[in-house]
Structures are given as structure tokens and as C-alpha cells.
Image 1: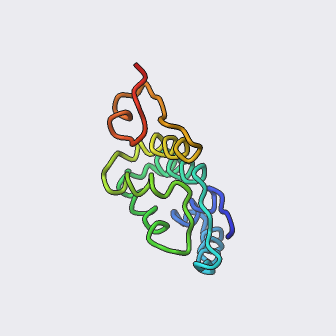
Image 2: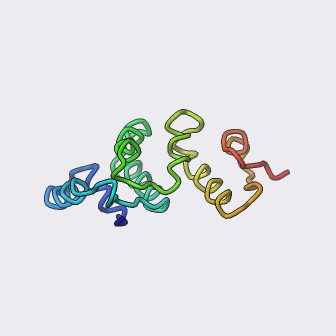
Length: 131
């Protein structure tokens, strides 16, 4: 398994730098289930932020792009479950960070993740409103 940084994902998805895009395409093209690319939760969140802010992509466009990584065994996506929940409509792209925070908390053994965000408390499994 080989990890990738945000800039590799962004160049792959946007093709705004032709040379770097081709390097990313070549790298991802050589990934297999036996030697997948690892996309960390931090890389995932940074990529979404860059695509929204710098490239002005809509949430649906971003989700379609990220689906490439979810639909292939050539990628290991940290917090895949959170991304799949948002993809299926359990929350919005803006709430993905909340889903990831809660998922990482669950993995660490937290009984719940407390929040002051009412929407997150309603939408995110294991997230509870601090009252």
C-alpha cells in the first residue's frame, strides 16, 4: 500500500497541470488490490476543501469524483464508511467532517462524540448534542 497526498488527488481529479496530471494518472493506473493507494481521512478532507474553495466544484460533482476511489479495490480510503454514508444521503457534503470525527471517535473506543451542532447530532451516528 502506498499513501497519497492531497496534491496528487487534486491533480488527478482536475487535470489543471497536464504534466502532474499524467504522473498521477500513471501512478493510479499502476495500483492494484494487492498494491492499493491509501487515502487518509486528512487527505480526503483537504481534497474536498480544495475542490470546493479553489475549484468551486459543487458537492455533487465532488462526490461523483470521490466515487472513483470508493468504487475500486485499488484504493483504501480511511473513513470510507463516513464517505459512503454521505454518498447515500445520510448527511451533506458539508457534514462529512462530522461523520469522520465521529467515526474516528468510534474507532478509538468513544461511546459518543459530543457536539453543539444540532444538525450533526441528528444526522451523524454516535454524535450527541451536548446539553
